[in-house]
Amino acid sequence: MDFCVIMDSCGDMSKEWEELSYIIRVPLTLRMGTRELVDDGSHSQEEILDLIRNSESCPKSACPAPGEYLNYFEKNAGKRIYVITGTSSLSGSYNSAKNAERMFLEDFPDEQIAVLDSK
Image (cartoon, rainbow, N blue to C red; front, side, top):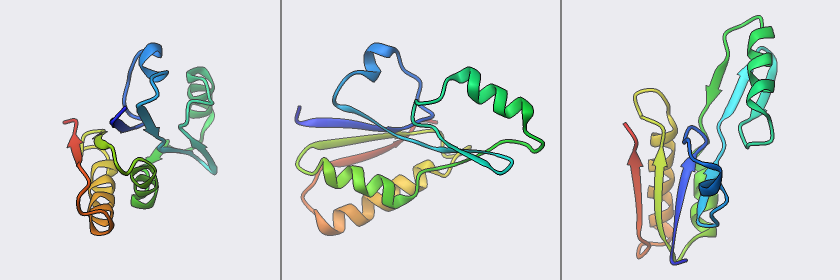
């Protein structure tokens, strides 16, 4: 493929789409009390809901850092890169991806990349 779609783990898609090689997920981190869980698909929804139910504090999420996005951008240099993040009104993921885009284009000014806010 001459392109890839990079999205944070807020994105919802079918199992068939998850298996496509050109779709890449960048995980958010879920925090429940002192426990941190990387939302990388290795935990079942039931497990996550149980942790939330049993947590003494309100669960929180942390968006991927710009460096995480940058790593995926660099791995896919030479391809058209489309990034779709959770809405910027609820998550910092869009801003993180935009910061990574600026850094990426400093080193690879001829690359084609578009960062989209799902709003």
